[in-house]
Length: 373
Image 1: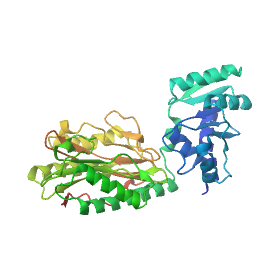
Image 2: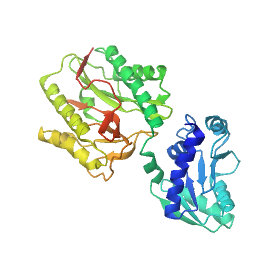
Image 3: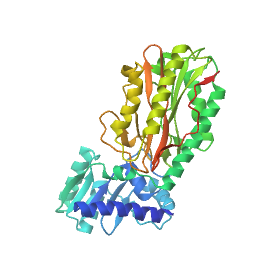
Image 4: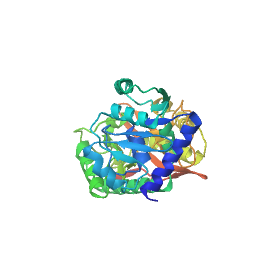
């Protein structure tokens, strides 16, 4: 399916929502939503330099000279979306499109900054345009939650690179290496073996540092008996992988082995129980119950997982209070952990897709506790 066909289909889903809600136009500023609606791969970055306006009949994209050529190439010059780089501010450009479309009810995303929203109102006033702004609550993000097969193929490729990087780093780690040196090798391997980018700053946390779930790699050198938590992922065609493995430098101790087995049991119990439509809080509860029953309930304080796609954190969310459900086609992580302050931490994470028959992980890396060094 080419970019034009994908854009038509995705815009069609947005227009169906517009029809249900009575919107005459929708303003899209969220970068990930724009990436999804345009299907323009490897063009957008973290800079909020683009705006879309969508009506029942037309769709426009406003960008600047830094991105215009890349959008034109990625969208094959045949897109369902008209792209321009007119030298006006985004609020002024939006107001012009609203005037052109004679839109009266205009929906804006709730991720707009207050400053941008004020500038948009000023631009509307300057053109004497009469319209009512309605607020959308992450509606495009909710559409992105269900992936098509091409998106899933991108996610699988990102995971394949990530799995290969894990196999490599297990042969690389040696006693006396710093966490920073291990991270540099891990990330360099991904970028030189097919990754278009990194999903996030990789976590390499050894010994007591591993008890901090989002520890930053340091100069600490790994030593005999250390557990090392490695949380990382490759990006392919703007789609993210996310995987965590915990390895042991040398031979694990009895407590380390016991805690690892609890985390693995919690992960695999949740993965096996996951089913279409299941509430995120219920899936979290399955893993949490295993950990609590083993006596480590106070050592697992974060949510079980999150959606993954164009963004590293998307819907659905699996946490103790999450009302999200996991529909068929949703992609999410399962990542229970136990963290013992001053001693060590253990996390085991796979990303996968919800199928009719349950959770299908993308990762091929073993769940066994791997000894390295």
